[in-house]
Image 1 (cartoon, rainbow, N blue to C red):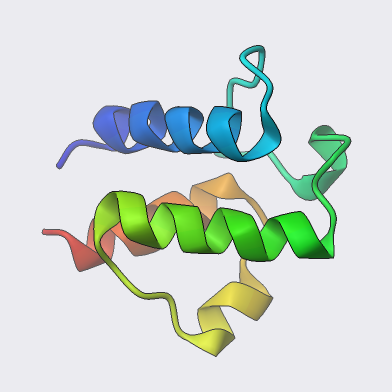
Image 2: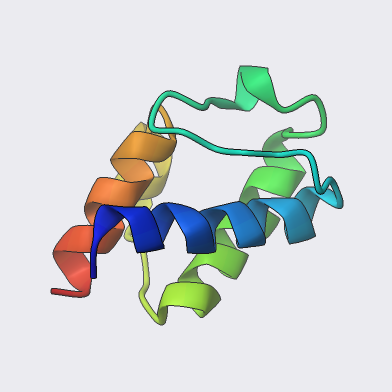
Amino acid sequence: MEKEEIYTRLNKVFREVFDDESINVTENTTAKDIPDWDSLEHINLIVAVEEEFNIKFNMGEVTTMKNVGEMANIIASRIK
């Protein structure tokens, strides 16, 4: 799967989780960029991303992801 498709699907998930059609994630997007992205929404987001891509993040990955680019890289490595 190409990175472009991953970001398209991530955009869909982010828009659904945060109920905001204006969200356009990039590799540099962080929680600071999305006002409603708090610890509870982070859990909802992780679950939604796992369901969208049919993968499971491990706890280390969840706690060390610094931005959407790192999330996309993990997704790309899992669905090759």
